[in-house]
Image 1 (cartoon, rainbow, N blue to C red):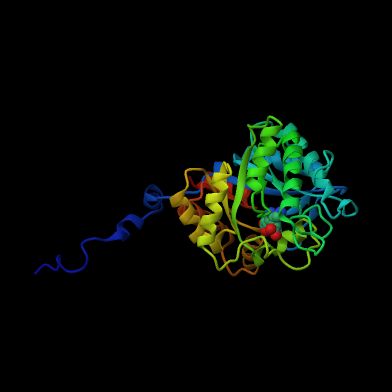
Image 2 (tube, rainbow, N blue to C red):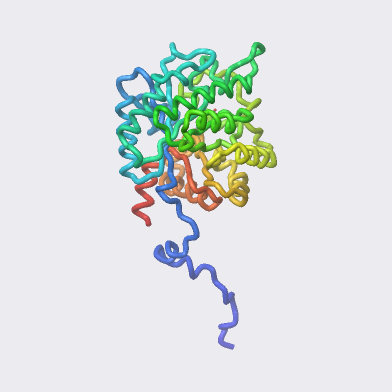
Length: 333
Ligand code: PBG
């Protein structure tokens, strides 16, 4: 006997032999055009302020934000998602800076649009946590509970001023019931049928948002568990998805990213609209910290996470590494 009949005939390893072979047969690869850079802009600072818990990420000045937006265009990424950080003294119970046409987010939207025009999709956060003195995503009722319907009125106003300031896409992230319908209606009322809504559809009450609180100088005490989803629940995310689509969401998102790939994959099997994942602050910090200690290979680990989102079905990924990762992807592909 020759021995040829011994051992497996079918050998998947043949397709893993060389980098060229692996590249050719890769089923999924993240695309720079689908990456979205979340960016913070802070009022009243002369220089960018580093965010301690997110090494490499800063609170931008108006000028440095414009430069970052220009870099994002040069890197060929898809979009930028802006978060405004008003001066502490301007925050109040109802988040007035969020509806002031001269509030920092609106100012930044105008700056960025003047810089990039339509070469980058410019998005903004519709939420009150950056502008309220209590740090919740909505306004509070007399008992201190987040008042859903009173908050919707604030979101409607925010949507209109953000559209006026030049946002192409609005990202309501507060998980209030009915927020997509109210925002859609508010936009249509002022003739802005052209502005799209990216719904934070399944947004979970996550410990991984920790570093973001520093990034936006949030003074939140307590948690957001009465409005964000319980990490224990999966079916509930499908209910949120049905509602957001019925209310007119143009795109939907799952957030955080890696701990919720099951939800992302389920959405991918279900939706006919573009699907995004948000790789959030704590996911960023965790990986940066391990890399800094030399415990993991930073670049490989980042690209692996982005590949995972793509494999699970995300068309778009919000990630603080968007610009850097786009460079690696262009080099590799
Ligand atoms: C709310 C909002 C948050 C994030 C995006 N939008 C914070 C929260 O819900 O607590 C978190 C993003 C991140 O952690 O990177 N405006």
